[in-house]
Image (cartoon, rainbow, N blue to C red; front, side, top):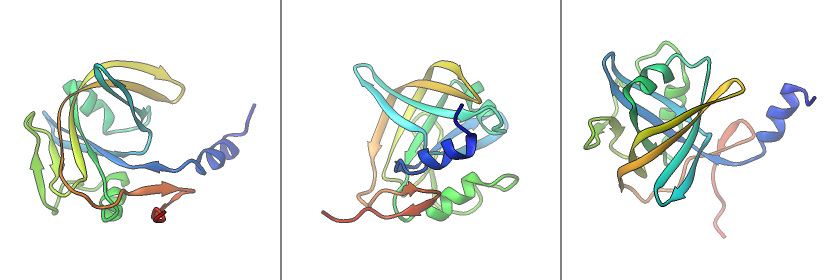
Amino acid sequence: MLEQRSFRDILGRFTTGVVLITAGTAEGPKGMAVNSFTSVSLDPPLIALCAADTSATWPAIRSTGSFAVTILGDGHAELCRLFSAKGVDRFAGGDWTTTRAGHPIPADGLGWLDCRISTVHPAGDHELVLAEALDGSLTDQAGPLVFHAGRFTALAAA
């Protein structure tokens, strides 16, 4: 079996974007940074993400049955770090707005989606979440926040 550190290092060479998953919950706004995010289907419009079993945030978001996805831009590295930290007020400061479904999103994201959870599957030490996109909008034209080999980086112009 492949050793866990080697597996992580190999997968770290796969470049990903980063999104915030946020929800207005009974406990107040909750959110987390996710780089295991992808589109799944255009008809119906489906997305997928993975949430760690150890996440203290995901259970509160999951219990709402819906959430917002914000695609982060190249100026959001610090916001992403904040949403990856434990024991901090992730929503303190910054310019926040809400989606039509009432989920908090940063006002300067590249785009957002309001999603309803369709199914959640156990997947090793994570949950694989499929969700239907019900609403959304493009909101900025900055470059994407890119994550590669354990750090943020920029795309090179072609």
